[in-house]
Length: 307
Image (tube, rainbow, N blue to C red; front, side):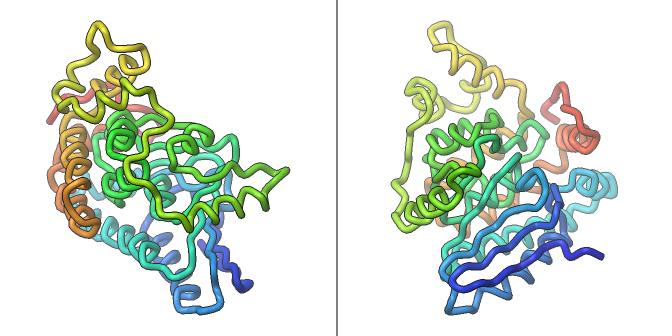
């Protein structure tokens, strides 16, 4: 059987590559832990980079497995998987070497949460990044509600998670989630630029890249106000964003919004634990099962009912 992860160590650099898997699952998380074991204690490494042999960096979790566990009423297995995934990303938080994600194709859901845990991110121009969970009836639970606000600011993170909008590599760079655009003509320069950026403390509450009116709305309006749709004087970008919020799963929105606000009040570790604690609330809903069934079948859930 082909190894799920390939590790290449050439001090002062190491590279950990997913071997073509598009979705995060239990065996892949275990393989990533083992790969990190091989680099974590080495004093001769300055940078560890992550990428994927496939067309995409990482496209969420394995929806079919999640649906099977939900249908079997096996929430414990989902919680164990989330804790294990969070555990891997927590190891990156305390890593001595710098970490760099190299994104091409899609980095969505768990993929977006992974790159948010890295010191620096470079992306090819065709990359797409987003957190679609609230449109699947669930909430980001691998650190998305906690790391994204710390990286790009509360308002921008709230917009990203409550609307589930996918952004281009250029848009993600403007927001502060991507540090460099990595094209085939200048791969070395882009990598060096991103690594330099990783050595500079990130300014909290970055606001670049989104319209001021949109950011003010997602900074200050309550969730019921956001879900109530646009106001007559809202600009077009904000109107589109609010219509997207109104189509998302109500319970998932409420939980995600609570966790986003919590990120401004507590330490990362407490916020991550709350993401796990809220799994029981979200995964008990019919909306979550409908949304995950649709995702596993490669389609969108068309309507959510709030139960």
